[in-house]
Length: 290
Ligand SMILES: [Ca+2]
Image (cartoon, rainbow, N blue to C red):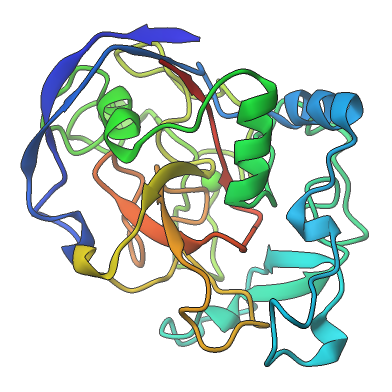
């Protein structure tokens, strides 16, 4: 882990999406934070030791999802699919598919696996799964302020975790999406899906993957009072009606699916609310110690 000193900083942004505003002063006590997102190998150790079964591996009950098609009450999770060509961007169901058998061991669906992905961030984990891991590790999930302060790496008010320029001297600094989402991925950063942690340069605090790769759960609630931009990054479990049945937590950092043409959220101020019952292939987490 990396020690982050106590401090005061400008949190949020008024230059991008409504849910990030206003810019306000925030203070955090000193804390320690994981150098990189929790990896598949680390999560596997936790599961081996505890026998933990993640949310996506359990069949939900009809009590939890009273309006769901009974055929959907099986283990599964949300998987991203690149489309063959341009699609309307106002409906996330054009690229997110609820997939039986998708879970952290099968992040792209039942036929996929984690072989060769041991150093990638674990995905397909809900907020409860992340919390269970943190408790096992004797740690906690970060608050949004802790996460954003750590992500800024000492660059108060900068657009990105490394400065104000997306690709300084042409160098790719994070795993994002280059090209037209969700059908054309130009792979300038070499990765279409998740990438091994520490592939791109660290920020000023020595932290890796604080932008792009996977969104990361925090412990803060995402309230309606925060406002809400287009929910491109936070697909909902299709079994849920009404939509607000499960509360949302703040996730930070953006992911490999964030394209500037659609979702410029690989920035420390960026935030989305994701329902606590939902897991996807582009959300992971890291832990803190206080
Ligand atoms: Ca990429």
